[in-house]
Image (cartoon, rainbow, N blue to C red; front, top):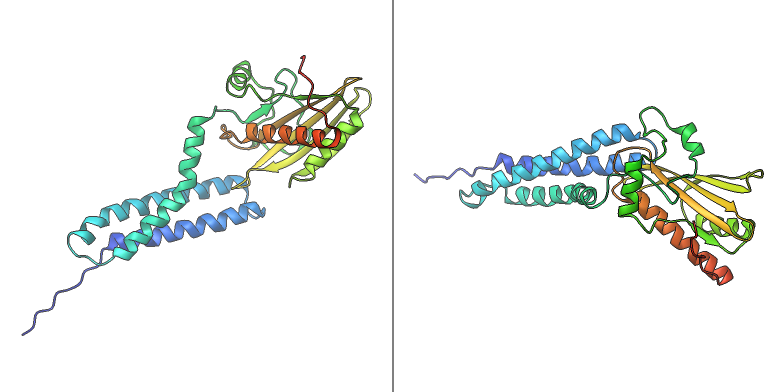
Length: 265
């Protein structure tokens, strides 16, 4: 009588693929929902935590299934492979965030003027108790920014207020930020523009304020960028301020041929 060998399937491999696939689908759906405004940020953060746990468990199950598939001939090699690959792909953004948290200072509010930061007028109206409070930077935060981001500074241009404002608005026209303003303060010869920006990948909201001060013969531009959620911005706000100021230098240079004047403040 012929003997038949029973082919056994690794349950760990099967569940590795199932959990990895589910975590990927959940990540994509939740991310799109958050970007489109269907999912609030706090629930989205909880979903991200669940996604990370599911992907990590899927990767562990793949590792657990490997000996039985490789050595004992269990079925499930394809499930193991797909599960491990998808789990790693899902975990990559979390690993990158961890690296950025390690390599950047723990700050969530960056300003070119630490002594008198531009006011986040719209943020004061729009932020809820669950969001980061709008506060002036503490002495420790000012020192940390100066040490880690010494190049985050304002710009002084040998231009009128109107021409500088036009350059600022030209740069803003190339962003997808939601703008509030400009608001003119004639008594102080100051113009401010508030904006709501978003992080690139997961669209976390960020409040931005740009202040343009008429100094008479020159005009000075300051900027502030502050995350609504989280103690650590992973370097996002400093990158946003630096990019905007560099773009503003380029815009002013292309229109007038001028470069920023030395900062005498």
